[in-house]
Image (cartoon, rainbow, N blue to C red; front, side, top):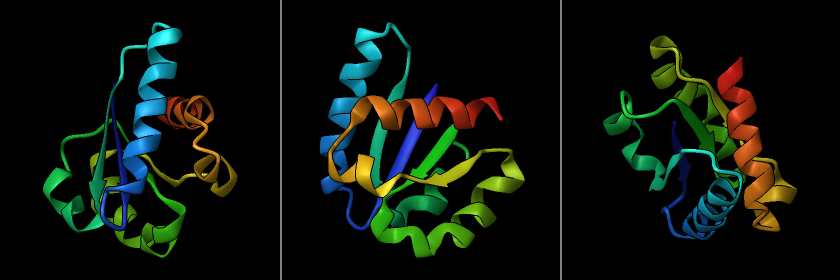
Length: 101
């Protein structure tokens, strides 16, 4: 499963990605997870199974849905508390649940 996280510059989210990868490894879940700046969304329109947005760019949800929805790729904003606490396990499970929809 390919999970892409987009945020303002791709920096703060990279710490969360590290925690998500650790959680995936512990649970033996195969996941390719990357953090990218929101400016690159359009360049990755075919690269994901699930897209998550950092809470700081939740205002971009309509644009993200416009890019990914036509391709059948679900998009959601990461829960602010989970993002702030860098709860990789919860965010990983948010992505997995979203992929099932």
